[in-house]
Structures are given as C-alpha cells and as structure tokens.
Length: 115
Image 1 (cartoon, rainbow, N blue to C red):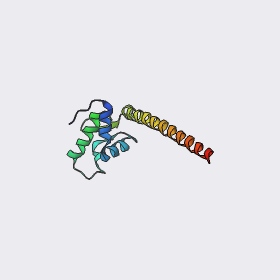
Image 2: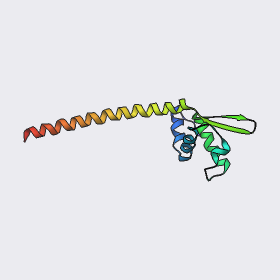
Image 3: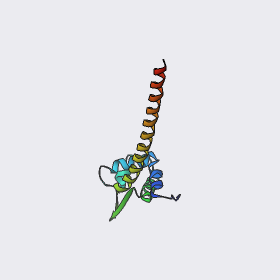
Image 4: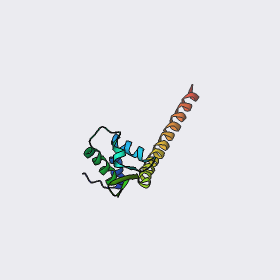
C-alpha cells in the first residue's frame, strides 16, 4: 500500500473510492460486522476486505474482534478532520468569489455612471 504523508492525505485517498464511501455511509448509522457490511456489494470477500483495510489504515474506521466476529465502526474524529479542511477551503473560496463579485459590481456601476 502507498504511504501518505499526513492523516488527511490518507483520509482523502480512502474517501476517493465509491465503495469505501458507501461503507462509511452505512457505518454512520451504527457499527456493523464485516459480513453484514459486505452483503450489498457484488465482490468477493477478499476484495471487500482490501477496502476495509484502506479505511482502517486511514484511521476512518476501527475494527474490534469478539470471538469470530469482526465489527467495524466509524471514527468520527477522523472524518471531522477532513470536514474541517473542506470547510476552511470553502470559506477561502467563498471570500475570493465575494471579492470578485464586489469588484465586478463596482466596475459595472462605474460604467453606468459614464452613460
């Protein structure tokens, strides 16, 4: 597996796949055993386990084994880190588009005065 420089890099890599996003979505409702998580997907268990490994390595999920059952749960704090980064980026770009809109409006109102 590739190694990522920061936990944020690993989280975005893990979230880049639709299967892994679907797993996270499912786990947002409640923890679930691997067998139950794998049921909706049309892939073999080894392939599905690779997706779980990526999610676990990224820190987005944690697993616990009780007897023969491995149960997965979301680590909300790791998702929150990605959400915080996205929110910061959204605020930055919103501020930039607001400044651009103000500039355009200023230019447009200046042209109207010349007419």
